[in-house]
Length: 605
Image (tube, rainbow, N blue to C red):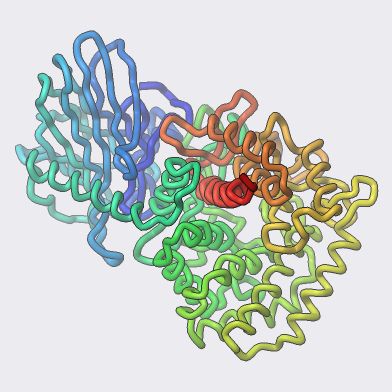
C-alpha cells in the first residue's frame, strides 16, 4: 500500500448519493457517507496515518496490477498477476432503488482467483467525521459493527474477521474458481446490521448493477468517433449526480491539491450552478433528458427560495439538497495529500458574486424544447424575475468564474455570460410566447455587447482579455463562440484564439490564465486546466481548424488515467492534480467530442 498513490491511480464507484475511490492496489482511500458532502469515513488520501482506509488485496510482495471498468458500467475490476496466481477484486456500490432511498450505503467488494492460488488480506479501518470521532467495535460471528457518535457502519462477508484494536483485519486463500466477498455498509446511527450476505446474493446484486448501468448508457444517442471516452464521461457525470435532488457535484473529493505542497486545496463536493448547468447540458446533448429535467426542478427551487447574498436570485453553489450553508473550516489534524495543507472542508466561495452563473444556467436549459415545456408557467416566472434582476445588476465587478480571492474585477467572461443569459431569455420568451420585459432584456444584451467589445478588447494583442483595463488572457473566454457572443470564424475571434495559442497553450495543454500576471490572492502556481484544453478543442473545431483540433483532442486522451478519468489539472510532469474526478473536465470532453464529430462529418468526401 503506497503512502500516497498518484491522484490518477483510482477508479470511482458510487450509488448516485455518494461515491468512493478505489486505488489500483485495492485500497478504498476516500469515502464519505451518507452523501457526497458528508464527513469522510475513509480519508487516507488526505492523511495516510489517521484518515482511515479499507484494504482488500493479494498478500504478495510482487506482482502486476491492472484496473479497468466492466464495459459501460461503474463497476471497477482490479486484477493482480503474479507467478503464484491471478486474482481479481470487483468493487461496486449498488444503485439505490429510488431517489428517496434511505441512509444505507453499501460498498461491495468481491474477490476471486482466476488462476493458481492467491491469498487475500483485508484491513478495514474506518475513521468517522473526518477522523475526529472515535469508534467502538462489536465483533460477532455475523460480522463487525463500528459505532461512533452520529454514525454506524457494518462489515460482513465470507472472509473470516479478527479484531485489531477497534479495527478489523482478515485473510482468505482462494484457489482458481473460488470467490469470497465483503460488504461495508453505513446506516443511520444505531441501525441494525442487514442479513449476512451470501455468495449467491452478492453475485445477483452485481449483475443487477451491471445491467442498470448498461441499460442507462444504451439510451445515449452519441454515435461518434470517441464512443468509449464519451460514454465513460457520461457515466462519470451520472455518478457525480445526487439522485434525490438531481443536483450534480463538481467532484467526488475534497482537499486534493492543484499544486502538491500548495494551499489551493478546495472542497468540491457541492453543486455549483455553473458546473451543474453545463453538466446537464452535456448529458442533454447525448439524449439524457431525465437528468436535465431533474436539475431544472432543483434550479427552480433555488430561484423560488431566492437565497443568494445581497438579494441575488442565486448563490453560486449549494449543498446537494439545496442548503446554502457551506461554512469553510480547516482540518488541522489532516496532513494533506503529500503534505498539501491546509485541508479545507466546506467552501467559503459560496458567498462570492459570480455573475456568469446566470448565463450558464440559461444556456444549459434553453436549448431543449422538452426542458422549456417542462418548466411550465411558474418555472418561467422564476427565470423572468431572475433576468429582470440581472438587467439592473450585471454592470458591476465580481469574483469571476475562477473564484479568485484577490478582490472583485470587471471580468470579461462574466459580461459575456450575462449577454448569453439575456440572449437565451429572449429566445425562450419568443419560442413559448411567455410574458417578459423584452425591451429591458434587449437593451441589456446590446449594451453588454458594446461594452465588452470596447472595454474588454486589448488593441495591442488584438484579443479579448480577462478583465477591463488589463491585458491578461483568460481561457474561460473560449466559450464565447459556443454561446454565440462572437462568430467562431470572425477576424476578432481568430485573433483572440491566436493570442491564446501563443500565451496559454503549452504542447496542446491550456492554462486558464497566468496567476503571476493576474494575482488571484493565493500563493503558488498550478497546472494546465483540463477543462480549458477541451474548450480549446471546441473553439478550434468551430473555427475550422480541424487538424489542430483533432490532434489536440487525441493528445489530451493520453492524459486520462488508466480507466478514462480526469482530475482538474495536468501538472508539469503530466500528473493529474486537483479533485478527482472532476465533472467540469468530463462535461467539456463531451462538448468537444460532439462539436469535433459534427465538424469532421461536415467535411466533403
